Length: 247
Length: 350
Image (cartoon, rainbow over all chains, first blue to last red; front, side):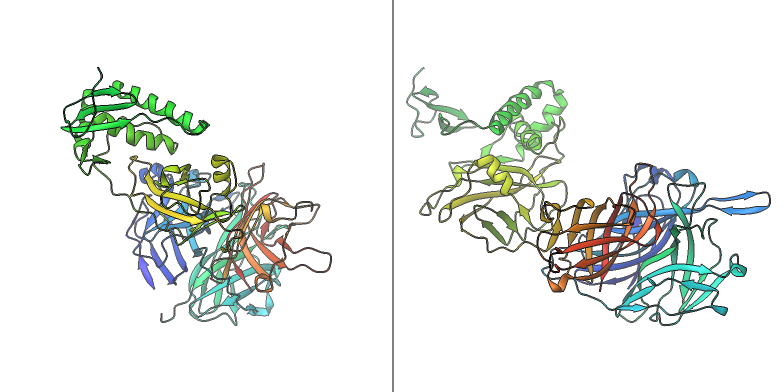
């Protein structure tokens, strides 16, 4: 089910959501930006997004992604030090989605938030329901883009959990726009997803954060942050994704 | 002056042998001086001191503020034992609402609330009282600014049908944890002795609106103390359920298996160990088969150096195996590894 926010307390304008909603959990997908200089944002203690009735009236904590842009030019070379981290988020009541306010990167200008999260209730009188893990099969030209063992998805009728671990890229393609077929990814997934990881020389409190796009079973990533291939900063994608299927 | 105080002789006032008669709003009020039946508790002393402080503070209000309290008091009624609506004065209401606020840890407010506030009634499905566990379950949650006030009595004879006058405040700020409220420690701290199986405990509960001091209707209940609890708490791993004498690599842990959804909920501070990018928590009790498996959740660095790096973590939920106790391994995967890292949120399980 798709819906638009009815308001927020940080000056972000209307936010469009994809959702799958059940009695005890919801999966929400949205991407939006805000301006840290706006008076509404500065007055807020917690970022609140007002939404039409959700199926749950509160949730446990989930994680959403914050991304800032930090692109510098140095001697004719573009040095992308964009980065980000995870913020805590929760459903406060049927009509309010809350996101922790983290001011560490306010001076960077416009901030992008990616909501690719599952919000669950607790004490529902049942055990967790186990899904089935399926290894992700990928194809790229001459296999220039390679993914780690921990790249997989767990499929449900209306949503998918996706985890991808970057393994390596053929040197000649390192600065190209990447395109990779996710051969067995379930249908109906279209989303911008943060690609977390890679060193961040100018913002050492966080890793780099690039953006990838998934549509029609193809992952594209136009550019990566500067330290993307740094050892020990393994890039990954972590997302609960709503499928575009008839509810 | 000694008078014969009796409601049959309206208009009398004065005190005689511990009985006081007075006229308030055309009503005859008789009050019997009460004497404490038990030792004064610290909580009682604190509350009496706060009442005195609140009463004195009324004099510091402006005339306009006092008028606002008088106006609001006209719309509020006090409890009556004569079946006649009792009138409240501005200072009565000021003291009553502020005493409630102070009891809930809030500051005294000088300005009267804009109007009377409707406060929800308490609803819960069960209360289980045993010597070891006193827990309310199925509480219909109310968000802030509401706090649950729970009053309970010590163990009374099972034959007593009306023992609510014996209740004392166990806590004025009970917050349910997803419908559960374990008040065992609060009960023992206040009452001092464990409830006795076969005897009866009386309970009063109401919601307190901490922003105004107004309270909801008092919900009265009683329960026979049992030897063992019939209540099964939800499945979780918390610090008190870790193996006490085993090396642990988490400084806090709450792994909750009660979602009924395809996820386990995590809130864990992983401290790491040796040179391995993982943390292990050893459990006192075995993990049942249906909760074992592999799970994934997000992490965020929480290092002293200020690193708040986003990471992904895989969790392996193991059952006991020969001499190795059940354990949960939190293994770092994506992003830069930071010690400590907070692993939180829902984790898919398979």
